[in-house]
Length: 370
Image 1 (cartoon, rainbow, N blue to C red):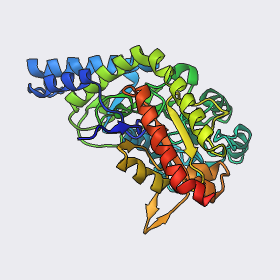
Image 2: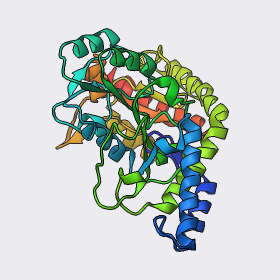
Image 3: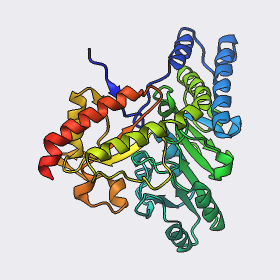
Image 4: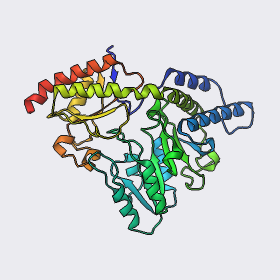
């Protein structure tokens, strides 16, 4: 069987072996974390340990951590249960934020995909209605990092709450929720080598966001349902390992930048989106001139390489990605973009294989189109 070169870490990250081992250990024993007997107390202790680990990773207090079923659920709870009638979201938010409320107002971004702070302030000043602002810490497509501390400062001047979707950032760059100043954050375990199906909602104080899932009194009454103990334990192990690995993760930028240089030597008119801005060290959003993104994804898949198109295919029609559209990128360019995202298993020889396959496809299709 051909080994797959995996360059889609922003979609999901393969769990580390230590994570799987810890989860299997939990799955072999019974224990409901809400039960008062010995097995229940043991499960509760594992959940509390994981809560402390994720809090340490992001500079929070354990009591600020609520476990959810996903980052999407955490985003929805924060945005639908804040009690604020007015919601303002940046134009490049993930669909988990964009679709949480149909009445959200859109705040524009500049050509690098960074939120326009002046425009945000004007939007906030346009109404006395108490508002909530949602801006992601790092974009899932381009990797561009947003000025959350400045967003929080502007919002405070207008009495607004700030929610930050930090799903793509945590585990890739240092995150200090106190320094960033937002009121709530969403995290997702599988983005930093933990299991799928476990998320985190971080709240500055527990009174700013109401219950979303109703039922029992788990998670201090803010998220009903029996805790996914195995998943939460896996998340805790992943958080501890991510904290240790941050210096090594930062070095992925060297591999990414080298990849971008090599591809530009092949196609000088290739575009790297957000390259002049601070980005996640593992993320490259780039074009193959003249070749649609879905064609690239299929060709790379046949070559044993997994990447993302960043565009949706509906009824046979390739649509330009909304993130690039918000940045003012013309449709004929944006549909040629793909996302390459590296991770903890990435090796230099994987990049060699990618460059060879990329050049072969470009010489076969792109140069002819150009």
